[in-house]
Image 1 (cartoon, rainbow, N blue to C red):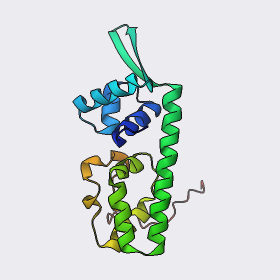
Image 2 (cartoon, one colour; image 1 turned 180 degrees about the vertical axis):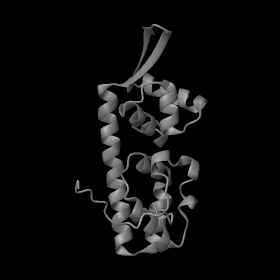
Image 3 (tube, rainbow, N blue to C red; image 1 turned 45 degrees about the vertical axis):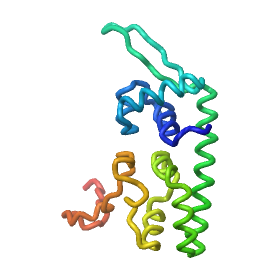
Image 4 (cartoon, rainbow, N blue to C red; image 1 turned 60 degrees about the vertical axis):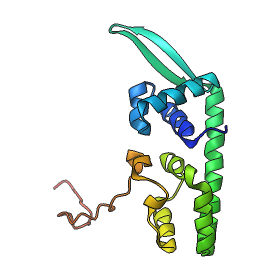
Length: 170
């Protein structure tokens, strides 16, 4: 599947159960016009089915992944995992220049790896520390899916002392 990584993200969002245009758009954060174009391309390739159903409130369109689309997605996720393993191996070797080259070569795949949870986010941030760079140099904030956005790990200075709360029923 030689599509742009956004096509893979859209296919993944549908396979995760987002069957309506609005839900797919929210999950992928892709502009409606571009999303429509991607959906048309996926349908033309036989990777998704677009079904019109009648309901009490009128017609509703439901989008599902075909068997061909599911197989294609599984193959792409495997390829992305292999790319991540290569990047991780270079990081572990300690070669900063080679790591930067790996990121340059795979820049377009980083948001997709984030979307599917392929990369270890802790290791990812340590890679950028090692290179003395910011993640935003490679992955714009708007490309990061909402459930993968980096935060401070809960280190907000709240009142919780980090201990265990045990209720023994007395």
